[in-house]
Image (cartoon, rainbow over all chains, first blue to last red):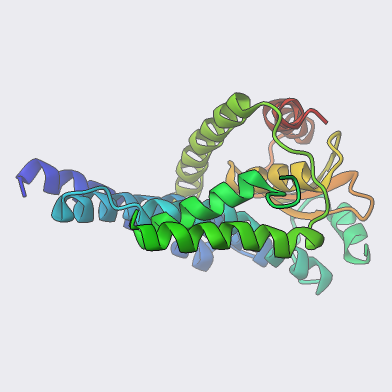
Length: 116
Length: 162
């Protein structure tokens, strides 16, 4: 495997890893449940895509043909990440989970707690 | 024909995913995949509630690229916010009135909002006329709502023609 190809693969692997690390960092750093939801929702999508592109390149090079599994995982992630974050946010609301005091629009959110 | 192949797109999608997962074009898998692609829609037909279909496939594809680009921007933005030495956030709940009506388009809009910069959708009102978002760093509520309606909802209305 030539050096330039290894460079490209490591760019995607490290870039993806960096975004996932940032997402986890956000989990630690952000103040309440609702803000914490943002970091992993966005970071896992792009971070995992980075890892998947890296893995796709590497395994396709090694096997000599395009390896479609990784693309399927990427598509499934795109479809499922927003759904799980939505369900987490919705159940947090229904469990009346606290939010940071400086959060605006609290009245609007409260109306949804008893909705359906 | 109608009764044997009620959902041609779903059947095709199932077959393609089956072949990709098994990474093969062997006749055995083609046969097994085809049988599944025919059977699964027939069995699950009754569970579906009818949803508007994509009327403008090219616009839908362009929309996908727009969202992919926005996902990139969203990640840069989250990264920038996370790495600031002092966290300066203006979190807020925002209600967006919806012009689109049916379940599937609303789902696509809510998912888009969750993946794009600064916003996560949190709930839909019981009558499906409003969407509740949580915003990480809100600058101007009216502007955010206008952006969402113009950038995403207007395009989805065209795609689904609803």
